[in-house]
Length: 484
Image (cartoon, rainbow, N blue to C red; front, side):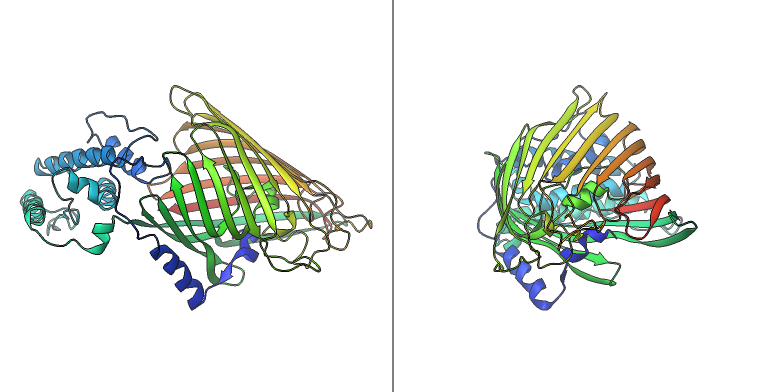
């Protein structure tokens, strides 16, 4: 697991579990609005695309954003009807489609009911056949569908008080991001000789829960720490998103957007480590399809000498311009960020404190995607605006505080979705125990709907900021990512 998050995890206790759940319960305040737009980040777009890819929407092209909840419900109802007819006609079942339809039926329950029929409480499951052990016979599938249809019609006609969750229209989902790494490294030393190391471990293991009701959002996630071999609270926040106007507000423990930018290689680049920060925050921002900006006031998880423990720092991130790539248009993004407290990054590059000098920093990120999202190029740069106090950070021991900075660049070819070939170049300045230059190549491909494989080879060259006498290294990483 990346070392950058170890200091940002809160130990798991009854209080850290109960408080986020209470906050999420506060989302329950009003009914869903059928004409409210679905945010571009809403999982319904992914589910609709899945049933469209299965040919259940008569060739309809699902947009990446812009649908209202009612429009999405119409498409979900159309897909559900088409899938049921396909099953009746003897077509094989599709677990991926059933999962997407079940999720849509839950998140759009109120809107489906307003269309004149109650959504199914559960997707019909074929009865296993004694012949093949997997799919039921045609008669079994027809019987299951008829039973489900009769139950839905009975539910729609009965006059009864709906269950609280159905009445309030709360959409929830559980997600997981698990990255398993097998790695081998050979390190050459300036005094001669070399060392070798290899391991198999969980590089990143996150399990989270999202709740949504109208414009309100709640998020809670746990993260596995493979160093201490325990689990702690990673993020826990509540927020309000006004999708129609594009603004949002958030309060709780969050990863700050400063320096937390995209990359394709499986290991976290030095530039991401340098800026990555988890903190207790209050945020207000604007997020529109073509631009955005946000202000984050936060309480750093490290202390300053002679200062109280307060919401003392701030970060500003500005999406100067952005556009999603489509088959007909190129995509791009240009983002600029500023933070008052680089010392608080999760890798604790300047130690755990108390620190003697607060260090401001800036970040610039740009990417361009072209030829139908086939090619991607990105560049990410973060730098401290001044030198750290020598008592906080002086890796080369010259009596002058360090001024860390880092650059990551990647060029990736993606001939088909999730089939990757890439090259990368990293550079760092005055970063303790990071390679001054690192060159890398990447190959990746999707193994299934759930799993992705990535293979990475990099060569690093060190300088005077290597405290263990490293001269160069060669690193090979094989990653299997399980995402649901």
